[in-house]
Image (cartoon, rainbow, N blue to C red; front, top):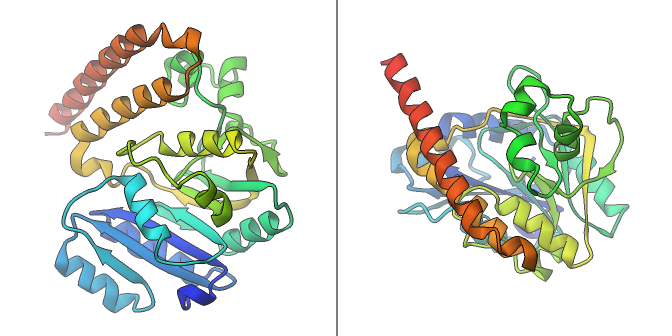
Length: 295
C-alpha cells in the first residue's frame, strides 16, 4: 500500500493527460503491489471534477494539477522532485502492473547496483507481447521497427529480431538491452540524477530511448526483466489529440537522430528530415481515412 514519500523504497510517477478511467485501473493495481510505494500523478490539462474524484478514491495518491500540457519528460522530472526514494517507477496511466512486478524489479536492481533502469515484459490487452525492449534506432529501424511493414508481414526476420528483442517469447531471464519503454520503467534515482533526468526537449515520444542512451554513455546498464509483468493498453492519451501526437512522434524522432547520430550520419540529416515528414504526411492520411470510415 502506498505510504509517505520519505519512507517509500519506490516512488511511482505517473504523467496523466485526460486518461482518468485508465488511471483508476492503474492505481488499483498499485494497491496490490508489494513493498512501500509513494505515488504522485502529474495531471496535465487537469479536469478539476475528475481530479477531485481521483483524490477521493485514492486519498494516499498525491495529485499535482497542471493547467497546461507540459509534455511527458517535463512531467516525469516534476514528479521525481516530489520524493527522495531510491527508485522511481515511471508508469503510464493506461498501464496495469502484475502483483509482484514492482518488487521484483526493485529487488533485482538492488542486487545489481550497476543497473540504472529496468523494464518488465509488457503485454497488450489481448495478451500479446509489446516490443518494449529495443535496440537504439539506426537506419534499419525505418524498415524493421515496431510498426514497419516488414515487421508486420515477416515478424521473424533478422532485422526486426535485432531491433525488437522483447518480441522473442523465449527470453525468460534478465537480458541487457539498449532501452526499455517509459510506459513502465524502474529507474535508480542515483542514475536519474546523474544524467539530469529526462530531456524536456522531447515533448512526447522517444524520451525513453534518449534517457537510456544517456544512461549507457554514463556507464549504467539497462535491463529487460521478463519475469516481471505489466499490461499496457497504449495510445489512451494520444487519442485526445491524434494529429498533435503524430507531429510530436516525428519531431522527437528527428531530435533523437540529431542528438545522437555520429559525424558521418549527421550528413544524412536532411534526408532523414524529409523522410520523417513524408512518413508523417502518410500517417495523417491513414488516420483521416480511418476517421471517415468510422463516421
